[in-house]
Length: 337
Ligand SMILES: Nc1ncnc2c1ncn2[C@@H]1O[C@H](COP(=O)(O)OP(=O)(O)OP(=O)(O)O)[C@@H](O)[C@H]1O
Ligand SMILES: [Mg+2]
Figure 1 (cartoon, helix red, strand yellow):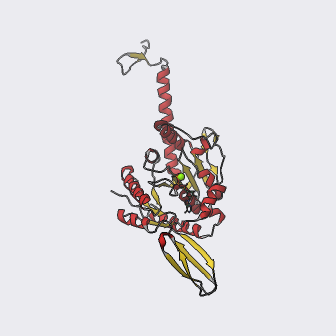
Figure 2: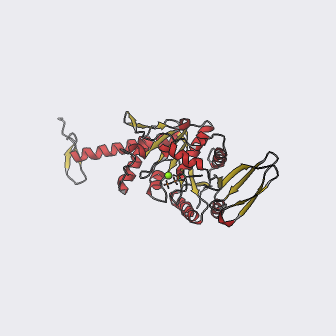
Figure 3: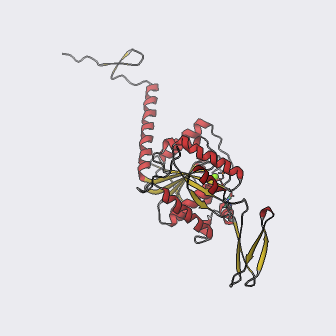
């Protein structure tokens, strides 16, 4: 019997010969589906190759998310872990600057984006690498921005990592949602707050937001918690120090003539109170340290300029508290329901 051409019913009900060329529109749809499938597979591979993924969020801007993200990454690298930072902030990215990678551009090889290596070998990917120059703000409308984030995540070649820290713009916007939906197995989120009331109210919003993302809250970090003044005076001298809020603090110089006073510039204890109220862990307090501001300007992070200083120690304590929450088979973290 002679071969008769096979026909396939198209959705419109018309039949088309199986060997006919796809239309340009069909071709485009196929290409899009293929690209989407490849990206999904890449996401799954990223999910497998990166042991822990931690999101850093805050309800309010300027509370120190990027300082905390970079500090956590460097502190983990100090422990000998393989670490990466993903900086999702398209509009005001400053992670590269803090990591000594100012002015860096994307490195693409075989259609894969390769992270830059910052201090202590931490791998950094930032939306800032897409900017033509740092003074030009990126104005991307919502869907374009979110599409770019998805593509970005899927196209990065991280290799094997122990930790990926993800830094976000402030607020409970679409970015964390997009990342949470794209990247599998996110361990949880760290909420950064300062001790002021308004920042605390906003961090409560972040905690509630975690419910909708179905991502556990690893805990709350209180940043800019207190400013420690160290000085010297004759041993045994008693000093009165004028502190914020009209308070007077007293200190006595020890036998070596040293004294130390901590000023609560923005009050204190609010992070702990928020954590208690929501039943999530308090991960610790980070001091107010002008070295963070200098580090942001000159590109040498405080943990790098003073690896054994009080701020580095405070970060190490926070890292330890986070690790205690991670799902290494012992603790699955806490999820608010
Ligand atoms: N513990 C700290 N002590 C002193 N200065 C700090 C501390 N943490 C952050 N800063 C300073 O506060 C400013 C804001 O910090 P950072 O950029 O990390 O905040 P952010 O929450 O990421 O901001 P944004 O919401 O714009 O992304 C920076 O100048 C930074 O150097
Ligand atoms: Mg930031």
